[in-house]
Length: 165
Image (tube, rainbow, N blue to C red; front, side, top):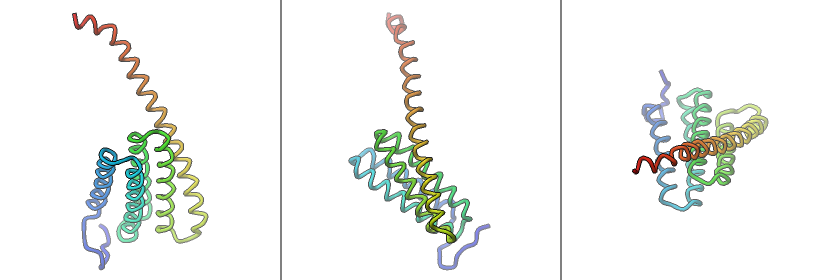
């Protein structure tokens, strides 16, 4: 099914991708809980760039270009949403834009060989719009969830005294 390169050990490709994504998520959770915010931001960016390079190298050996770009976009969106939920909203907006720009930059530089400047420009433009849209959408979802929670809590609150009696 997949072509195996002679110089690369034959490891099941989906297991390696799954393991790298799992480790990055696990490390991001661990770092966001136990370390300061700036170290978390720095290491999350480092992990994101590392995984972009890793997926691009796997793409050149095993995967088609579209699957590799799909995985990197999925990882970028997942990391942006995850970091937006864990960090304050302004820091996460900056970080998701930053992550998306570097994801596209590395994927485009390592994957596409023709007309690189136009590809980088279009990719950066798309990633900025996507990140701003995701951040605004997350703000909206967060406010919606809070308002639903508060409305349910305010509806239940008058009946709390009846239940206690």
